[in-house]
Length: 123
Image 1 (cartoon, rainbow, N blue to C red):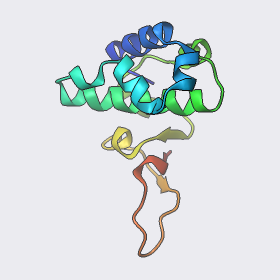
Image 2 (spheres, helix red, strand yellow):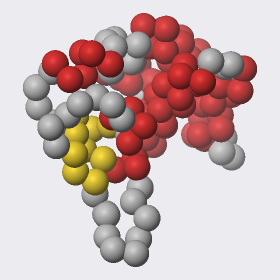
Image 3 (tube, one colour):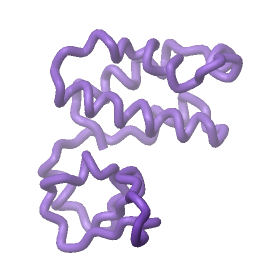
C-alpha cells in the first residue's frame, strides 16, 4: 500500500523500464533506484517510502513477475488505512513503526543475533 505520490512514481517507472535491461543490469536494485530517481528525492519521508516501494518491486521482479503485474498489485492508501484493514500485514520495520498494531512478529530474532527489520509481521 503506497501513498498517492509514491504510487504514481512507481507506476510510471514500471511503465518506463525495460524488463530486458533490468535483467541484464549488473546491479538490478540500483537500476530501479536510478529509474525512479531516488537520489533526487529530498523529502526524507518520501524518500523512505519510495525506497521501500523499490525494494518491494525489486523482490517481485526477481521472482519473475512482470512490471505490468507489479503495477496491478499497487494499492493506494495512507498510514491510517493500514491499521483499519484486517488480517496480517507484511511490512518493513520502518513502515510498521507507529502503526499501533496489537502484535508484531519478527522472523529470525534470536539471542546474540541482530534482527532484520525487513522481516517483521504486524497483526
